[in-house]
Length: 158
Image 1: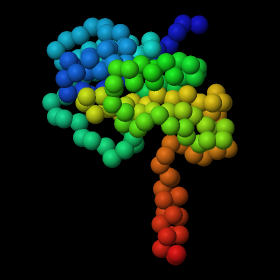
Image 2: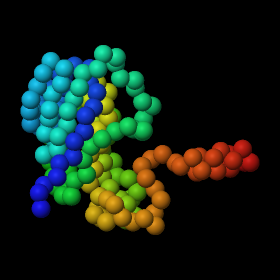
Image 3: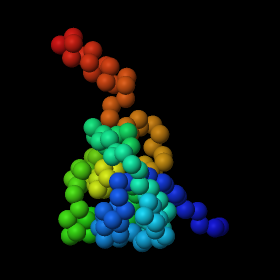
Image 4: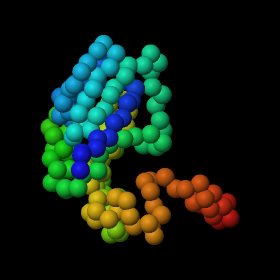
């Protein structure tokens, strides 16, 4: 079977700081480059950073927009974490474990690039959680609208 690559185009404010973060910081390989764009290989997947005129608006947290990698190997995840720490990249959220003692348990950390794009890197304790475990309904740290509504009702009744 032919290898299929994921492609993501995303906005940045300048190429120099983008290249420093992704190539020097994360270890991406640089491909073609123009004054307004650069192609990057992130673990073999194609990222294309395009300069935009307007600065990106900050989001209030990790949602709704972020991208990153899911590692099959915890040792590879740890190696990237050590690299990030050695190169003093800025954490948006420091390494932590989510959904401890459940089939969804995973280790994760978030970074922001110089343009404000949020990246997540994670490793699931159980590989089945990547696409399965559908009887569980937790996804991320944000409660569903229904959960938020129920929490609001519970607080107002207390």
